[in-house]
Image (cartoon, rainbow, N blue to C red; front, top):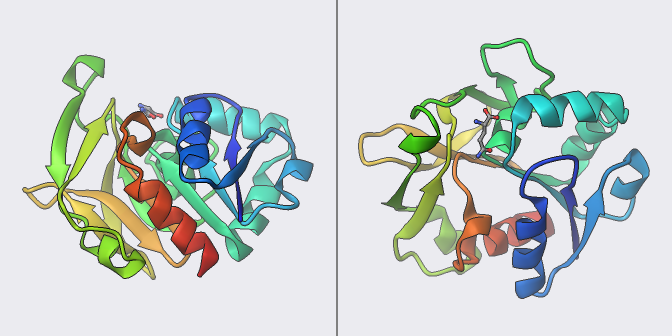
Length: 193
Ligand code: GLN
């Protein structure tokens, strides 16, 4: 099992630390050839516009779309935006996941927040189902899931913050910034199955 982390911009280093903590081999991905021997890929948080522009500049858009058709990809925050079909703005998107997102839905940097979430799907991967403490930083909202995407977690008021479509996973929040490894374990389980 080897899970790469797209290392163009954003907090890719924190994801690599989390993967090493759960004993998953990892590597930085900057060029199409770096995708060759991976079972999965994490697209980190950061600035989705910047990540998109750099992915275009490094000829990564088509290789990433091919990868999404065969392997597992998890986008956190900006990464979730980059996976979406629509972010209602003109910016490069992979458009591989049947979700629409609203960028910065919760306001500015000062409106970042933390909240406990229910994630029933953890049970499928034999992970305990205690509430998950999630960190939101200028987070996007997953406005809608359609097609074959489904909701993995929502806020108490019903707004969607995590979705899954086959081996694609999108979270509005930042599991790499906590010591709780369950989302990394869940993604490794998705990449394996
Ligand atoms: N606000 C950023 C964007 O729209 C995402 C923030 C993040 O990844 N923490 O791309």
